[in-house]
Length: 332
Ligand code: CO
Ligand code: ZN
Image (tube, rainbow, N blue to C red; front, side):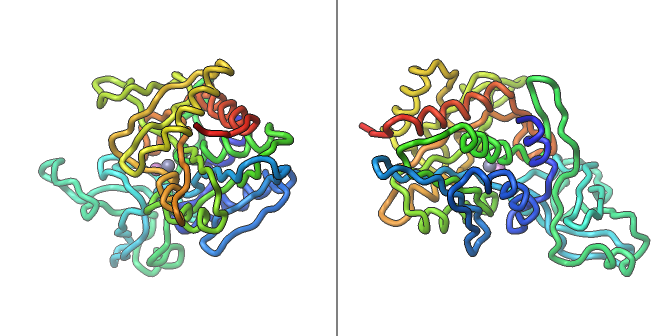
């Protein structure tokens, strides 16, 4: 599983430009699914057919990652940019970014008398060009870049950019691999544009029209020094979401997931995330409404180039999803 994590987190795929990572995931799953298609927005939808006795279930993990988009190039070849998805300016200082064509750059700031003046508008990217003409040979207005950096393998813990939500993509791929025959008609959907407003999940859910939707995404933790109070910790197991700022998970589905975890002795924790959303919110409000929930991978330092997850938690999420799908999915 580690090799797959490394491959996916190191690949390029900001919101709206997920082609490279989609291709990689398609390679991994095409032999495992009964049908694979890509919709107009770019969602990758893989179906594992049921036997007609089960439910229609949609699983969603987003392929896109946060990044930046070039807004202008000055005479000296420095790039100005805007965010793609959410990040805070201090996170970007001194960081390296990479464009789809391999062009690399470093982010720095104008002179500031006070660090409090640090805003996106003060930042620029230096791609090593000496003037506008040379810079424009490699980068144009509207080009996107993502954080650059290899996976740090710390043994049980892994650090990389884009764990949000390539680790969810890994959970879905592993689930598809381990599932075997099952009653339910399961759609494994690798969504686009989550980071800019859950857009891919919305059209995918409409198209698939499932009875139950489960998203797999990262969630915050409350276990680092003087962090915001939150009862989720790294290494504490799969997080079963109760609520975030985008949805309240369907109570029957949430209870069902807790029961499956208990029965199978899968480590789990309950999650209340005060700020943040997931694809499950878009699924829940699709058409006349869908029963939706979330299995989250606890993650430190979300939306930075160094997002950290725990291997045991990832395994717990896979186990929970596999065991849920092997069961009846009758919710009460
Ligand atoms: Co995110
Ligand atoms: Zn995410």
